[in-house]
Image (cartoon, rainbow, N blue to C red; front, side, top):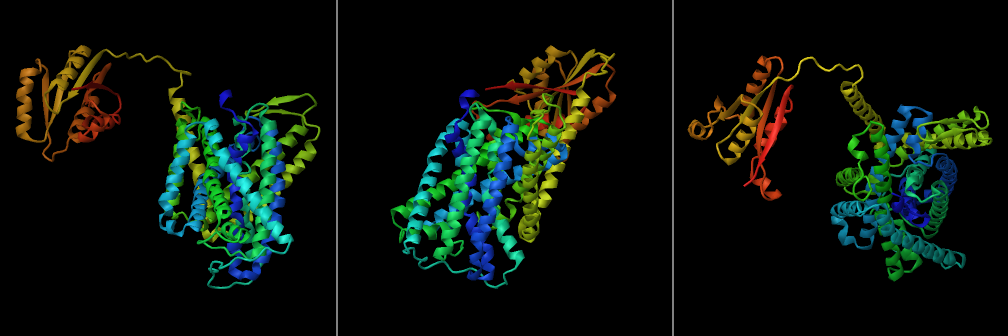
Length: 608
């Protein structure tokens, strides 16, 4: 594990690509909402961006405190679990997992939108292209954190450099008075004009807050950084937020100066680049390429954090335990595959449309912001009630007295208040356009978490050795049942194994065709070595049901201390694909027998 940790430069590429890439669509989403009131409303975009940048600063300061307090990572989930209880922690976990899934869907869809802006002929293929990109990033992440980080570092820094060049070139033109307006801008896709109201501005604000998604990613993945982890993660967070704020404000300001128009056919980044470079030359193509790649690579942040968070929740018993498994490359491979599958389904359902996916986006992450900062404020309050030098070990960290606890509590409390207001605004303004799905999905996921947890608790209780007495009744004899579909070498091999277990062996054949059954009976008389054969008639040609009824009857009349063992012959072909050529009767029979209590099932493989 120490050899798989990363430094600040690679960490910025791994955990900041989501936040940085949001600059490619956050401004556009503000304009999409304001467009309902006509181009005159576009003047509100920059003031809205300033408010969002201020919110970014508040959230960054809050999470910087979280990073140093919880060096083990886990972010909002761990903070809420230690300070607010399991229910708020599960709400935060559900919100973040939903947000990470949507991060992949939105960033990939936005990247494909950039691609189709430069090459409109590809627009009809955007769904398969998007799904292919998800699978590509999944494969890269399965190679390991360090390897994927190095892979993603080049496109991340290429995007930063190209955006600095494009924005710098645009600002030089702006200050020299040579910055023109967009030539042949897309048609403004607004049929009914609405007045400029506070509700409209709040809707635009809530859409623009997608720029903040990904800010929490570093706090969830602190363990990926080299020692000193908290310091490296904190510096990376400040780098990321500074770059994000500068790019977002610059893009929003300049798009207003050139008269950019939001459109599904051409993004505002494309309009800004071709205006700055006076056409679709090499620098324009480089900017669009960098933006497309960073948007696609932005999904890597979710692929880095979703498996880690799901593993933490699974370790607490609220998700399947399989998600805690690390593959040979020391990544949570099952979590990575799960994320890729769900995100691909969303892309297919919403046809890779960013505008359709955005209403589902960001509300989850702001809900987790609020819970996390509330938990941190509570933690500082608990810290203030400890004596100097006193320490209390909690599940996620060590709590000790902090002389500056009041200031830190105010910072986190104010952050919680701000993000709570944004969450409420988002829920109200985006409710009818899709936010209701997330508002229903989050409590549903929490309920699923609890059901999984109840199952694990019930299982642990039933298997516990506490107050357990060794049963008086011991197994005294085997009654062995051997299902046979025909008589061949595999059957005889299973029969020999059955006879080695017990002298009480019964072969059972289900008769579907009387002629074939008679042949089986004759062969058994020759090769069965005196073992009794029971033939079950099945006039409706059902194979499983007569056999299951027979076994269930045996379990009902079995004697005390008697164990019923079912020997299932299993054919193993020479090559795996050859399984497709066989009916897999043994597989279905074994699964059906598992549901019968007090029965032991043994598979005897045979090969040709």
